[in-house]
Image (tube, rainbow, N blue to C red; front, top):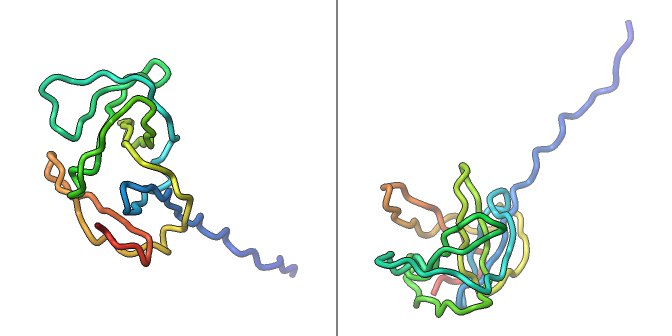
Length: 138
């Protein structure tokens, strides 16, 4: 009888988060949904849109909504200007660009505190907001 050496199953991939800065606060987006950071030189405002929808922008021939998360998080709205940075996220074939001040880096998701807030969404679902340990929400 021959015995084969024990083979350990591969370690599960560690979930990571992209840390973004909005004002004085840091927030995190799961890397698996983050696609890229872009600078939109132009965007088109949408008449009668809710305040958090800044407009729509052309991303390589595809229109994406440009969203300001600040009002949804209880922060002062951003002053959207040409050259504004946005984090493009995609989930379930839906793509959106969220205005950000900066990308701070990547962190393992487990190093972030548990969601301290949930966002109400028009579809009735609740969305989790993660934050880095030691950073306070303002």
